[in-house]
Length: 199
Image (tube, rainbow, N blue to C red; front, top):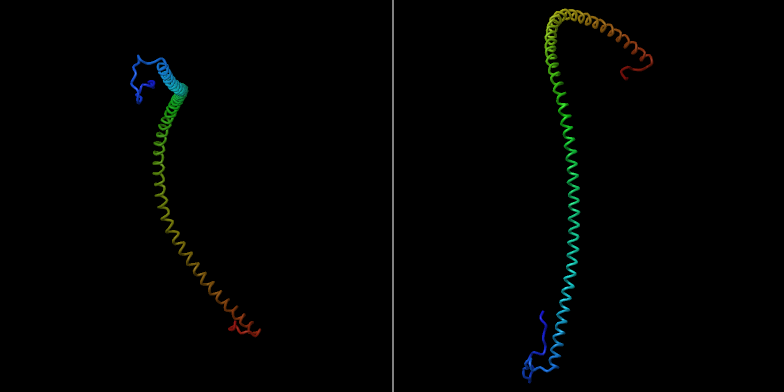
């Protein structure tokens, strides 16, 4: 900001003076004004410099914090990368072991499958043989059962006929006994003066 110079304006009732015609006192006043203006200018410059210094310190602090954060981020990234590499190697080793184990198990299962297929084939042949023998035996038994059914049917008819005859005989006997008992009970009730019809 350029210094303000005072006393150069026009005053009412006075003529403009040239620099060459200025008196010592005017030159002194002019110099004093210039010095004051320079002081003001210097004070403004100092304030700007102070503010710039404050901003500079603030930005230095921010830059320092950013550098520390960047360094920490690099450390963290290196740690993460190292941990991921370790985990990857561990996982790769475990996968290799698992693959080897599965391949061994697959070999065992294949052998067992072949053995089972052979056993299944033998079992099917044996089952067919047993089924054929059973069918033949069933056929023989059915023939025997048919003959036995006819024989038992005759025996059963005879037994039932005998049972019906015995039941008829027993029925008649019980009927006679019941009539006698009934008559005796009626007689006793009459002896006690009771009418069986009232009961």
